[in-house]
Amino acid sequence: MTALDLRLRQALQPWRTAPAWYIAFSGGLDSSVLLHLLADWARHETLPPLRALHVDHGLQPAAQAWPAHCAEVCQRLGIELEVLRVRVEAGASLEQAARQARYAAFAQCLEPGALLLTGQHRDDQAETLLLRLLRGAGVRGLAAMPRQRPLGAGSLLRPLLDCPRGELEEYAAAHGLSWVEDPSNRSELFSRNFLRRQILPRLAERWPQTSAALARTAAHLGEAQMLLDELAEEDLAAVRQAPGIAWLPVPSLPLAPIAALSEARQRNLLRHWLAPLTRLPDSEHWAGWRDLRDAGVDATPIWRLTDGELQRSEGRIWWLAGAWLQTPPVLDMPWPAGAQEMPLPANGLLRLRGVPAHDDLRVRYRQGGERLHIEGRGRRDLKRLLNEQGVPSFVRGRLPLLYAGDLLLAVANLELPGTPRMQWLAPGQPGEGETAMIEV
Image (cartoon, rainbow, N blue to C red):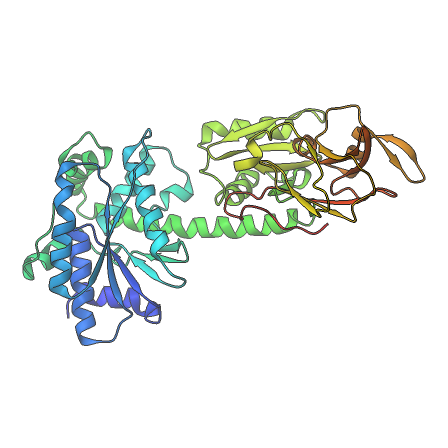
């Protein structure tokens, strides 16, 4: 048994009870060695079912022959292969777009608890660290590729991350493996290829342990990021003691306790909170956070990020994305006769408990100047009522209003004496389902 075998088995031992092991099989050297190692292991011991996944990006003519090559290799090794064809969206970085499409396809294949195995090795880790260092990445970026992370309903694991490419080449030669070569790997127009072909070899001439040292640094930075994440969780737990609005399915945090932290802890907390929601801003764009934080009390500042925006209202910061960035169409709809609920175009669902006895019930949105009769208080300006209830500014134009003719009867989700009970199930954020079912 080789050192390569031992490292692989040690890395995978905690995952022996997973329902399946999927191998990301490009047909290149790294994944070919990984697939061969696993197939050999499976012949001698009982492992979770092995399945190979090959992604066809459809980006270059040379790749048209790769699925057939992968199918031949898998047939010879007795491993099931699935070819995933993806569409790569055009963008500033074709490499990044292809990576996103690839991992999205992998994620869809994983059942709960399943494991995706990829063939990245120590030299890949060194290249990634150097690339990110040259781009001015922070600690999270310089931690480079994590050994494992969640992916879809399962997990991704890189079991060869401690192995140098030379060991994989020796294994492939010793076992007579054949693999495909991506022609784009020869183009030094790509930054990673330039580092791989020009820079890292020169560094290794002077410092032979360059790749190992860079990979070790990435591991140290990974530990540092874990500590920063723990600090962010502690700060978030303290901040979240101030609750938001129960019926509003929008991620939010109170501003004052965040602003009381040091600048560095503010950024650390926000990076941690925003990481599942959007691609994080680079250092130059953090001026948007300071503008949001320091704007006057009556201002409505916005910090626009890649996948949404942060707004400030009622002493909180609110993350808006998806449907919340779209203005719903003008609404003036009759309440359906005998119905208890009514879908709102691009704005969730409205429920009315006990339909009032009026012939001309209609649902509208706020236009300004509305007044509502409150039992024991008389007619009150709606703007003042919304201020009293702490309703954020971005919600006010979406909040359904119930009319009988031109008489305002009720405001959704506001429990006011003497008004009908009306429940608005606001649009959910992306990934939370079409409608957030929230009880008032």
